[in-house]
Length: 133
Image (cartoon, rainbow, N blue to C red):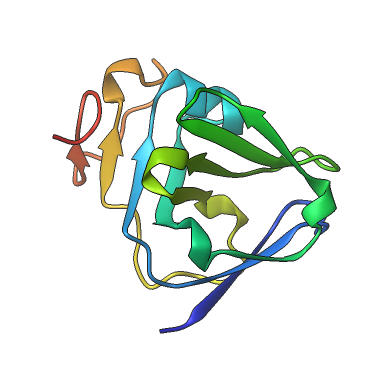
């Protein structure tokens, strides 16, 4: 299994993680759209304890979105890094921060019921109006 590297826009925060995502998908909920500033957020779920911060821990800022989810971003450049799903012990890594390509790609869309009105998700991928069943 290979190791992936990731970083924020300014390079102040650097992460390493195994190329062993539990899932990879595209979330269209309004909260992910606001957190990333894009039509949707491509994420890869991975056990939190498998992710290592190799530089810039002091730059990481956290926003407690709910009792179940904490969002992490770089306090220097504002890059969205990951969401921590506390009850599941999973980080949803924003795939856009990867510096090396993973062996897989997102294979589903979730929360399409609240997608941006100007965006049409890739019809070849499985779609869920809300979360997966």
